[in-house]
Length: 331
Image (cartoon, rainbow, N blue to C red; front, side):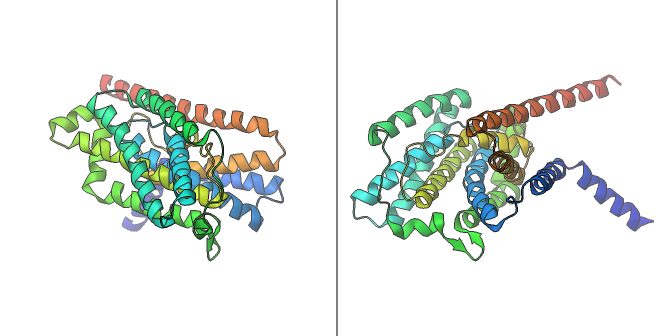
């Protein structure tokens, strides 16, 4: 009697897990796409989508760390673009080793994130407002430096990071997996991760308990900024040029991926792995649009619909949960 009861408990736990439902939605989309398009499951399409998946996956993991704290970061694409452009300029116009520049640009991305975090925590400002302002600043610097033109002749020595493969896996996808492992270790296996969940659940209570609220929030923004820079660097290695418009849709899509993946916008709830499943869903939807011959002008609209639907669903879920709690207390 004990074994069946234990198995039933495990099954119920899996069934009630939000990520299980999200994964089932992902599988459903794959089945639909496979049935209606003979090109969806081809090796070329899978490899192509794996590369696209990797870029959005890396920035979504950075955004997930921010969302867990109950914050939002809109500087995703602008940080990636500016870091990519600066990296490209230094690689083309100086004799520095491209990989030393690579490391320095990761530090630059972390510094941009640090500024975001310092403004949010030091001045007690809303992260949405701060990052909207920073988007304007970073875009302005980007356009001033480039005059809106791409930086050409990126050294071929870094191309393997964007165009290469490790066995059957595209290199950007491999890098994303490494980033996922690092993020999961930080969030799930360290004291820092526990602090992030505690602060996201209730910042004031975390302060009363003596948790290092400000350093943890600044770390999350800095770490996210470094991941945005990493995505930008891999993208210039993929394109062979540094485009000022890199990652123009990454901000909204990274937020949508996190929310679709079960990370609450109010913080303290969710799993970075869910954000990766959310990215997979977004990439499959975008691929379906292309394969089914939908006008490319509608692709941005569909992405916007996905974002609004994801955020609306999260809000409705929170309202229903709060109502159930109130009814339980009344009973």
